[in-house]
Length: 188
Image 1 (cartoon, rainbow, N blue to C red):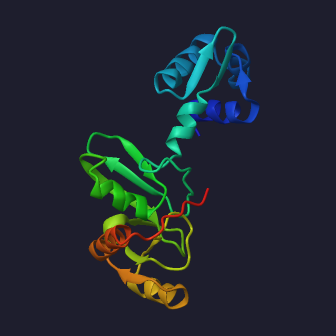
Image 2: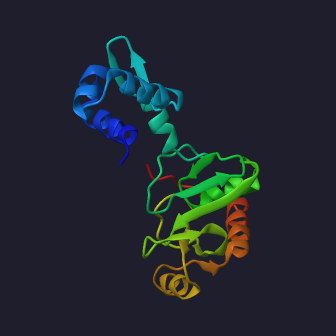
């Protein structure tokens, strides 16, 4: 862990701190700490006030919110979207990423990643297999749960129902269910 990351962890634990205490903690000069703090402030991660430093909590909260519905994300089903401009966005679930695509809310998408619902391993969104509309609703409805293999998606579907499909099928099924007036329930 580099020093700037460790400063963030210290601020998460302690709430606030001072440049002097951080310089003493890391056994570096005040000038070195000021450079680190300036970079963290420019990145929007901290707020420096006269006499103390604290996390920019608004920035922290925004990074873990869905770009479509604003809901807090859950690591098990969240989708991370990287653009060709180097920007990073989150969707709370595959359902909301489908809505982002439908409404063209994010331009120049480069890579989209999420986790296999069973293993937790990272998978590319566009090569994943989905179960749409199952009785398992870890996030928004109709649910769209991702799996790394078609076989796992089919086994899950046998227990919880829903339609198994690749990206295109899952997208079309989600949009169709939304147009049909399916109740949309957000778990908060």
